[in-house]
Image 1 (cartoon, rainbow, N blue to C red):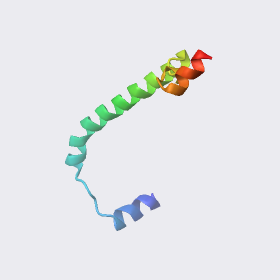
Image 2 (image 1 turned 180 degrees about the horizontal axis):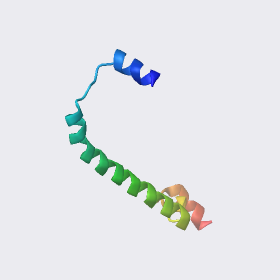
Image 3 (image 1 turned 90 degrees about the horizontal axis):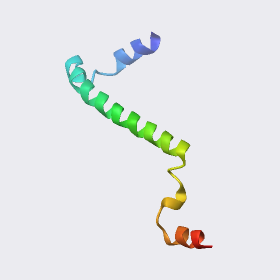
Length: 66
């Protein structure tokens, strides 16, 4: 509580409650997209789909041919 009192006393409120409520829907969408990307990356890691040799570079093609 002491930290909150200090914050309220020394920092002006940058946004009103209604402006934060209006932004909440957008934040939820952005969080959902981030969550889906994280879940997909974990699935790729578990399945091996993110293997480095899938990147088409001259070095990886040469390494595969040996």
